[in-house]
Length: 331
Ligand code: HEC
Ligand code: HEC
Image (tube, rainbow, N blue to C red; front, side):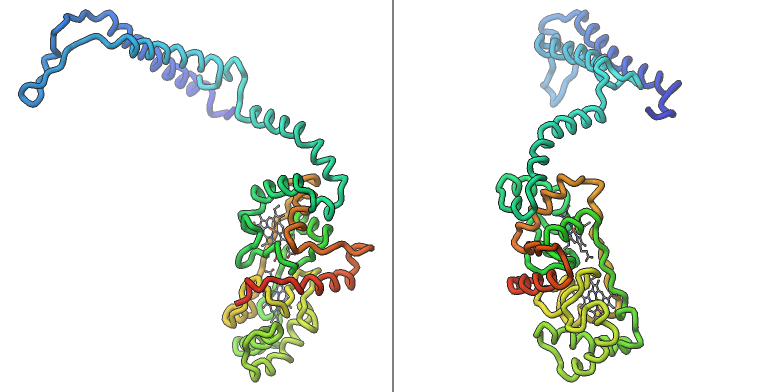
């Protein structure tokens, strides 16, 4: 309980609350005692002829009012409401929350445990697990990735086969548990190599040519050497990206920020910085296992290679997954 809420203020509140409840009771009681003469009016007159009888309160109304007073006193005895008197039940919103969490734990823990014994790829085919994963996703992930997990500008689509950080069960789990932080520096960190704002347009045309989008071929030809100097360290010599840095594949039709020339120029000149918050501590391994299975099963999951995630294997798996890219984010 707050330290300031003691001493004088505590008593002040107790007195005011009790006085108002008792005041109501007294008012009611004095009304009960009042003498009423049948047929007598209050003496008020409206609209020339409209008068009001001075009759006693109806019984049902009076008793309802008494009950309200009794209810208030009982409530104040049982629940917190009178200063810092905790109430006879000792109820707090905090302990109610704890009790509910405890009840949910006893209910769900055995289910989670059973699910945790199955690997992510298997679990992705289990309807009950998907249902629970979906509920978790809507609670913890939908505000950024969308309730259909298709993402938005800057928030990756999790249903396609295109992954910034990889789509194997382990890679998805790592994304959720530890979070991710994609950082593209302005001009790829090297404005001289890019040739400033004018050069950025050339590089942008070259970048668009990589995925077969309309481009000015003269500008693109000028942009190519600039790209090789400033961009390949992260996006790869062929522009297919780098999962360890979260550098997107620039040769496919999936765009995180948009493929319009202006947008690409903006990406190059201003850079991009993006964060997927870590959920490990908040959610715990069991929920993340279910979420990973849910995300894996959305359509873009990449089967784990026998010795999980050696760079060649995942690059291959990604190339395969690239075949099913949705073109929806391409402009
Ligand atoms: C505050 C917004 C936010 C929330 C909440 C969030 N994400 Fe993300 N997530 C992102 C962003 C942004 C990225 C891309 C990070 C980057 O580009 O470096 C991302 C990336 C990912 C990736 C990697 C995608 C890829 O292409 O490799 C996965 C998987 C993912 N999120 C799953 C989830 C799941 C599951 C949840 C719910 C537990 C979740 N996210 C909650 C913003 C969010
Ligand atoms: C230090 C590594 C690094 C360098 C160098 C770099 N990038 Fe990037 N780039 C990234 C990362 C990481 C992202 C994703 C950022 C995010 O998730 O928000 C990105 C995103 C992009 C995008 C957005 C793609 C989309 O899907 O919307 C484009 C376009 C791009 N880079 C082009 C370039 C060009 C052109 C250069 C050279 C001038 C370059 N990058 C240099 C790391 C880099």
